[in-house]
Image 1: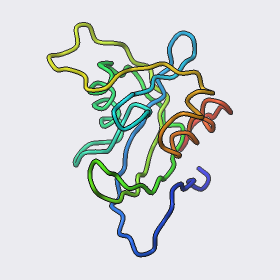
Image 2 (image 1 turned 60 degrees about the vertical axis):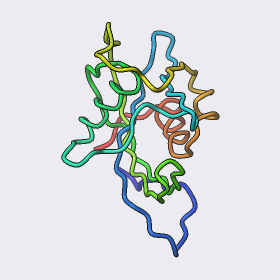
Image 3 (image 1 turned 45 degrees about the vertical axis):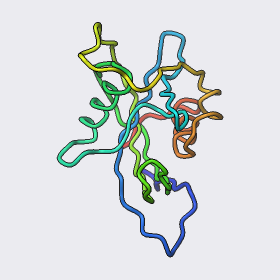
Image 4 (image 1 turned 120 degrees about the vertical axis):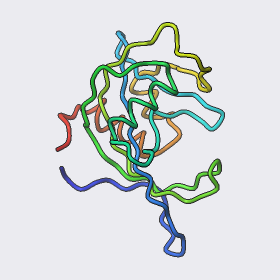
Length: 152
């Protein structure tokens, strides 16, 4: 893999907490990408790794929690870093994102809890411009618009 792109503004006087995470590109039959809409913005499905989880387990958990989909397969295709202030957690993070191409199926009925997010489907061009985090916008361009064979 070539060097990992870095996004966000780094302040030398700020302590950042490393936050590995996994994010998925789930496409529908019209080649639109699944986007999670929250009160904080628009994001690729995924999130931060919990202690003891593999990145693949994180991806599967997050997609189930956020979309109600069960991952059938995943393939890592990109990695990027985003320095980020989280107003939600009131903390500075160095988000280390691994991005996956995902095949998943909706669960019906959804297992016993309410989804807190909305699922929207965007074209690659929409996602590239409208996602809330810069490293996710980069990943859309790098993986979906330009095509990419994966990371090692």
